[in-house]
Length: 79
Figure 1 (cartoon, rainbow, N blue to C red):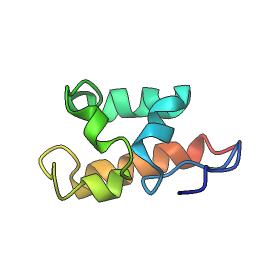
Figure 2 (figure 1 turned 135 degrees about the horizontal axis):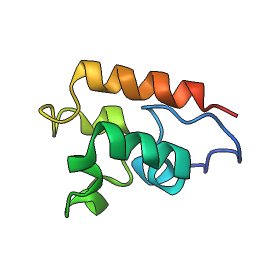
Figure 3 (figure 1 turned 120 degrees about the vertical axis):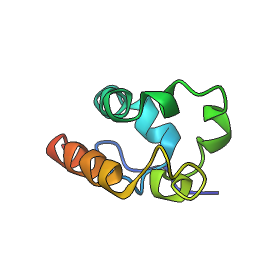
Figure 4 (figure 1 turned 90 degrees about the vertical axis):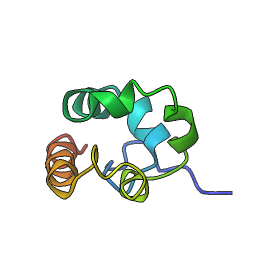
C-alpha cells in the first residue's frame, strides 16, 4: 500500500488527488484552476491518481500551463 504523505508534507501536482482535495488550501487552488475537474461526477475514479497522472485522461482540462499554475500555487502554500 502507498505510504501516506507525512503531515505537513508539501503538496504538488505529483500528490494524490485525494490528498489535494483533502487539504483546504489545495482544494481552493483546484476549485479556482480546474472547477470542472473538482466538480466532476467521475472525480472519485481519479482520486488515487496524481494530477500529472490524470493529465493524459483530461488534457483539455489539465493542460501544461494549468499544471504549472497549480504547481506554483501549491508551492506558495507549502508548510
